[in-house]
Image (cartoon, rainbow, N blue to C red; front, side, top):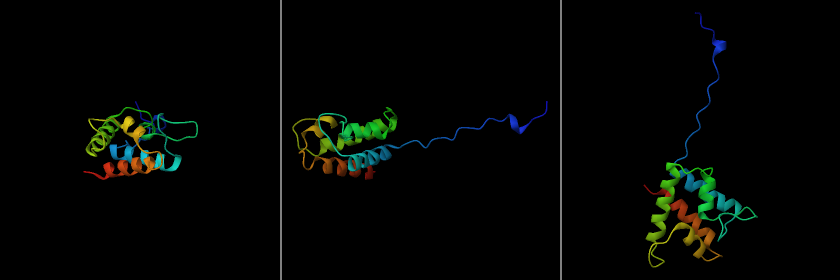
Length: 116
């Protein structure tokens, strides 16, 4: 049988997979550009908390990269030793001062993304 190139189907372009660093940096950008909130993953004004921004940055997909980003941010938050005992990212976000919390979240995410 003869082969005709017209029979070929266009192949899908592979999407570049996001790394855990990409997720943290994108989440920081989301908060910086759209605003930061507490006590909710996101609000009606388009603001996001730390976990809400990370979920949005990973397109709400629980990938390995999302898991690694979450674990690394969690470890960093708990190394700050600001609270007694272990604290999760959501609780940390909600306990931050409202006037400096956004900057703290953004800086912490970018710091973790820059770590080896």
